[in-house]
Length: 120
Image 1 (cartoon, rainbow, N blue to C red):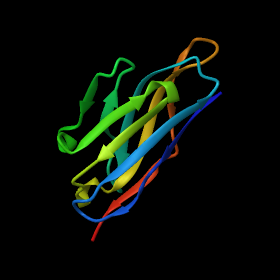
Image 2 (tube, rainbow, N blue to C red):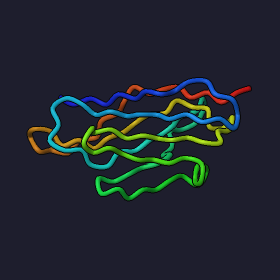
Image 3 (cartoon, rainbow, N blue to C red):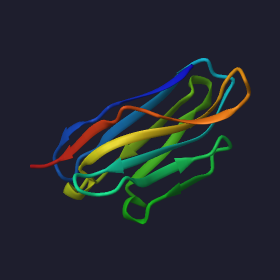
C-alpha cells in the first residue's frame, strides 16, 4: 500500500513565500503525474499545478508566474514553491499522485492536506 504525505503549510503574510512538499512512500513501483489541488472554505477543490513523470507542467491561470511545481523522481517527491502569496491563496492544499504498485496497476492517491493561510 502506498501513501502520500504533504508538509510545509503555515501562516504567511501577503507577498510572502512558502514551499510545500509531497512525498509518496510505501509499496511503489513507479510514480506518474503528481499534482497540487486546493480547496478554500465554501469552494470546490481546484487544480493548482501538475507535473508529469517527464517533467511537463501546467498551472491554473490564477497562479501562473507566482507558483512553481517541481519534482525529485529519485525521492518520489513533488514540491510547490509559492511566491507573492495573496489572501485568496488561502486554502487547504492537497497532493495527488498517480502511483503504480506491485500489481502494476496505476491508482490515484491523495494526501491529507496542509493548510496555507495568507494574512497580515
